[in-house]
Length: 217
Ligand code: BG6
Ligand code: MG
Image 1 (cartoon, rainbow, N blue to C red):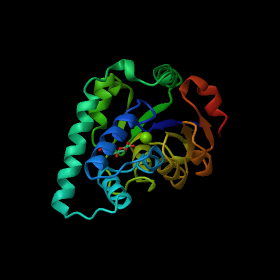
Image 2 (cartoon, rainbow, N blue to C red):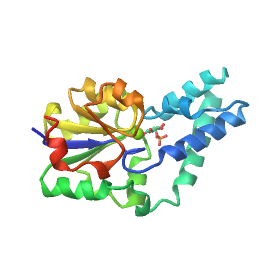
Image 3 (cartoon, rainbow, N blue to C red):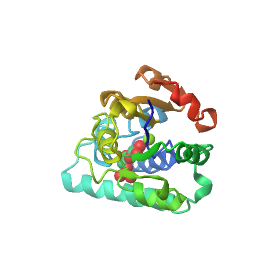
Image 4 (cartoon, protein in one colour):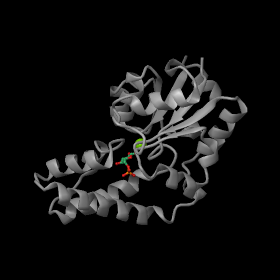
């Protein structure tokens, strides 16, 4: 039985994934190497600090903690600069209609994002009021693929994890949902989402309605 839907933010509700990629790629270029789209896939759903570690490994660069902290801050400044122009027009197709239909069906709605900027982004796009709980990068100790993000969300909403559907664009996020005993729906087209055991993979929210997802139980 479906009681709640937990949404990732970046790449699911809004296409901020492209801004994260631009900002990380600029950082890599500044250090003298490139970051391919394929390598970028590994950063999705992963925290800022962990992403930087992965990138430095790709470029074979060793840095002291102080420099790393500075680079992470610079990346975030650049990311936020790119996000500044965001408006409700940037909500991905079908998302708001889908959220409205969940409200109509009295299905609870939560956010489960690794981002420390999640509230700010939700405010930019005007969707904050839909979410009965927001679990973001400021609240969690263990990031995806650990299930903590989504388990906290389920707890906040007072629902069993088995009665939740998680919507995710990242392999780490699908893994987190499955580790938490939830139904996982992948958003996107990557074969990696299927390989990570998503229960369903769809290109976007235009392709589903509440009835389709109720059948996943
Ligand atoms: C995730 C993104 O949602 O949040 C990652 O997929 C990002 O790319 C992570 O690194 C942390 O985000 P932020 O905004 O705190 O740097
Ligand atoms: Mg994401």
